[in-house]
Image (cartoon, rainbow, N blue to C red; front, side, top):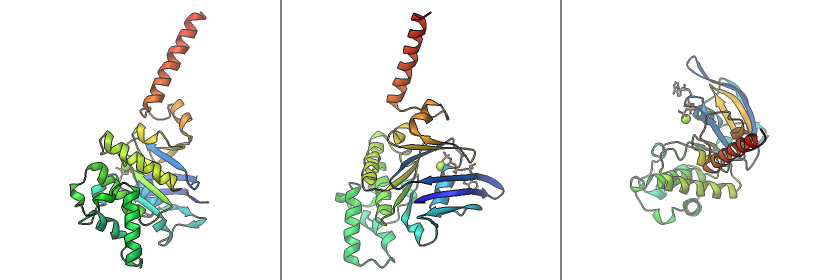
Length: 250
Ligand SMILES: Nc1ncnc2c1ncn2[C@@H]1O[C@H](COP(=O)(O)OP(=O)(O)OP(=O)(O)O)[C@@H](O)[C@H]1O
Ligand SMILES: [Mg+2]
């Protein structure tokens, strides 16, 4: 198995938040993780990258249990990029994760430049992260994870604090990451974040209630999640068309 989990359960104190979660993820897949507030999305992502430990079950990466060494290959992007920014300048922020990894300085500089240009922040390397826009901060958070060369990137509502411009900046970066072969799981309530996902996993009160293709998820109205604009219009048109046919055939 490339990545996934088997029979995961997780409790905060006595409160069971994740209940018997199992799924497999293929390399290069782009998956949307959806569910109402409190359904366990953030908790699941944190267990999958090893920030939190499951009470039961296992997280698997490349056929082995996730451990201290392999968890470096799984990056987690917080909902609020402020939680992730530590450097005084943009490049220092990206450098942070690489320090103490034994990467030679020359190599480090190359990696930082690559990560910043991949997210389109190459001209802002000397800037103070506090002066960046919301979209730029989120892209900086992505660069700081990307520099560690993760195979899998877990994004926790990466656009929920952004305006449409910031959101589309992040969408563009997600496209680039996918073209680099990264595997992405994105937790989101935003229809626009889910337009290009191939698969949706839906949680309800800590259980998986759907795991399948995106089209069926919307067609079956599994969760009251707002439809993307195109699907919304198509659904209205189909309904209107069906009503018209019914009337004509009466
Ligand atoms: N640190 C914590 N201590 C105790 N309970 C917590 C903690 N973090 C989350 N919870 C509870 O666990 C449940 C799942 O929370 P989680 O944040 O994983 O949900 P979510 O699906 O990410 O929600 P949202 O859409 O609001 O981000 C909620 O009932 C929440 O109150
Ligand atoms: Mg959450």
